[in-house]
Length: 413
Image (tube, rainbow, N blue to C red; front, side, top):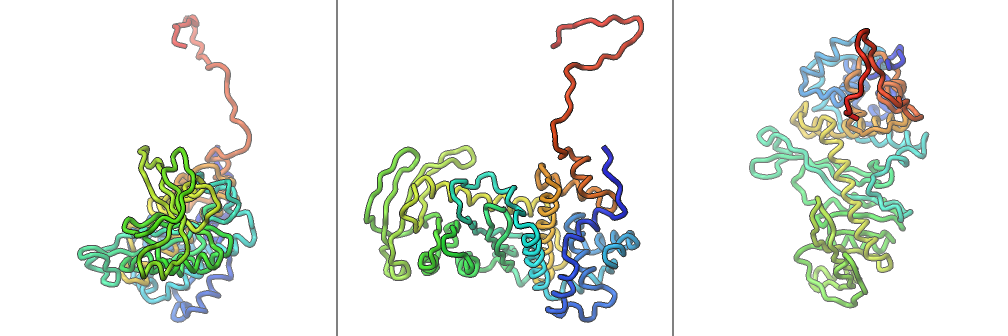
């Protein structure tokens, strides 16, 4: 079925999800509106969102594509196409904090207008027995070109940026993010990532984020946390709890090292369990500050942490985070933050359009018709099979009648 025609392009309907007043307001705050007469901050944002949607792999690709459609581009709140050098200069010189704040402001505005945004599409591994907010903390490494990016030196012959993310497992939307060089250890970012977690909430993270001083702070704030135990952790067993089934050990322990015990003098819950990973049974040891939950619940919480890996897979395999338009730290941060902004916009479109398919399928549908004048919601409903109600089915196959031939049964049913 052909989707309903519209007087606006799909690209306009996508970028219009960014509130009109936000870009200029944030641009003035960070001084990005200065010396921008021919290439405004709004045009800059549109160009980078287009880069994500079209999977553009270079400055010339973005510049040529937008210039060839400059007439249509003007309908996007008077956006203008950039020159190659103009886009490169904007990525290098304009403060990338504008992109970060635009991402969070757009997300908060969507959630303010639609409080249930994200609630219906939570991660399938979400532990439904918990009614609390479950925060999952993890990071992903984004490979860069080592000989061009001295600011992001990661190893001797490698360069990389890191995106540290705190994800709400119920809504599958970011709650906090850091974009910086991969040169620092994950544990140094733990305090900033968990700074605004409230009492009663749950945070789950990998052992790379373990810092005993920080764990004590979380416990004193009334935050429940679950992590994996470090392999070299020295401890003494204080009490043994009953266990059965896949739970191999459930004990209360106290740290033995002088520094670690001073940093975390409280008791820890240690659980060793046999769990399935990629079809194989492996033994893992978990830590928590909660002494009341069942051991299986703590294991289930950590298994839910793998939902953040699904999130990273969605943004890294779907959006444009492999080819970068610039080599400077500022240009890379602009592109990563606009990738996250594009992700949230597409998730919002899937919410209002009641999309039933995958995120990847939604992205490919929109990417293929960016310059077409289709109604976006009609495209999702009529063209992609998301209409309500069962599909019509025929009870028997229609037969073609040919004169002179008799209908026979050949026993192939």
